[in-house]
Length: 306
Image 1 (tube, rainbow, N blue to C red):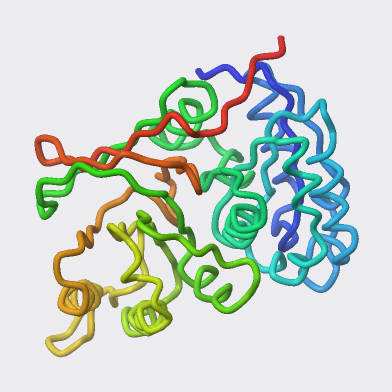
Image 2 (image 1 turned 120 degrees about the horizontal axis):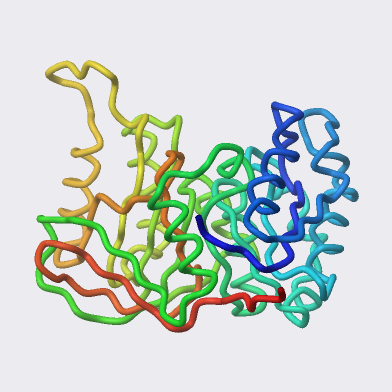
């Protein structure tokens, strides 16, 4: 069982929880493993599907971020809501306190805005709901290692990967949220990046439409590689002969971006198994014995308090 001798804060910048027991169960996971846990009031609120008013949700994130006694901040869940409050968050004040953030899905909006405004690295990884039950082994191991290990390392099997060894800025997250930030002051201008993407509830044609928009906006051509995670809903359960599939999206992108590594299989997304990824970190990416290996020493870490 991993140990978390730190102080963890749960906020709710997006949607309200669907099960009122979620905050207590997420808290229990960490207290059972040695952590002190603070639950902001918004994790218990519900205002038109949101976890409180816009002002309350901003206060939840800011008050935890500015609390010197909080080491790690997690959103209780994703959904929708961060887009409404991005312009109300004081990123410079948060950067001065420099807490560690981790979340995914709707939290992509914060990850990318925080990177754009301050250059600070945060994590795409589990939300609070992922700790209601004991997480999958890889999820738990990757999360703990990212927070405490001197070097962040992740790998996944990918037979289609060519021989690779280069460095780039790791960034991305939920595809819908990445595209939603295009043209806003919160979209990072990443040159020579390693872009990772995941999504759910979207068929293959909608995924391709999002990717075409990123390409036409000039984003994709600037990258060194594109990594696709879990797109579990891209294909129908029983594909027919002429169905447009996720494999067609990959073929389209490889034709449009010849020579760029476009790889599928990153263990990340709306699934029980998700590694923790440092958004904005300088990362080395290489292939080794049929695996893609990512590593960095620029990831944010927490220090044991107890």
